[in-house]
Amino acid sequence: MPPRRRSNVRNHVRALREGHEGMTQQHLADALGVSRQTVIAIEQGKFCPSLESALRIARLFEEPVEQVFELEAD
Amino acid sequence: MTESFLPLGPFILAFFVASLLVAVKVYRAPVDAPDAERGLFASACVLVGLAPVVWFLVGWMANETSIFTGGIQLVVAAALAGAAALGRSRRRRPDVVVSRWHFNEKSAVIIILSLLVVCAVFARRAWGSEDAVVLASFGRAIVELVVFVVIGHIIAALTHAPIDAAGAEPDERDRAVNLLSARNAYYLLFAGFVSLPFYAVFQPSVAGFVVTWTGVLVLSELVYYASVLTYYRLGTE
Image (cartoon, rainbow over all chains, first blue to last red):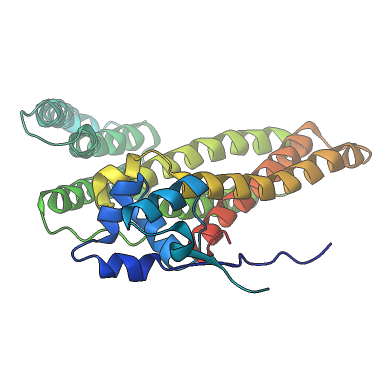
């Protein structure tokens, strides 16, 4: 059985959020309907959000989803 | 029984009744505070009133007193009142600092510590004892576990900031952590369940079988909550 790999999905949520003046982790959490700790985990790459949340984040920042999330090379 | 404690009886009874009245007044006070907060203050009042009653009854019937005959009630009362006061001060501060730990992490720590302490005490009481003693200790351990976990969660909820987050609906990360942790615990529970018939070959006593089966459950719970803690700390990816 091959060893379990960490996710290859990287995100730019933190950079995008900090680019939006005044947007706190709590604001983003409220917009997504998750806890602030979940937003922290997403920004730190400890948790990969669901497709629905990923699309919501992209819509919130008015960016294509592939600008927010990207697949790292294997 | 001894008669030397009897003259104190009316005073202790009056103190107990007064503490009950204060507790009811505190609980029904027209203040904008969560039920849990008022409930904790009221419980502390009742325990303060109960402490001399326990001391009196044990002293009267057994002619002996110790820290457990009244003192433990005072310690718990102080803990409950302190937790309620802390929760109240945090609730009233508009610039409250948000807790860095998720409430589920605190909950996992409380349950892990409670399980370890109660199981250690149970093992010390029951090791090498007869079946009746083992089963009595087993029942006592369950009650102690429930008390520890309930009090721990009340205190954790009141000291959590913001306090509403303690009872929040689980989000997608909470559900993912729960599923992954349950999977890990299931492996151990299944292995234990399959192994038990082999243990029966050794013809253990009823108490031995009950304790072993419960031990498997406790171990799987420990794995579950340790996994919860790990996934929240290190991530699910």
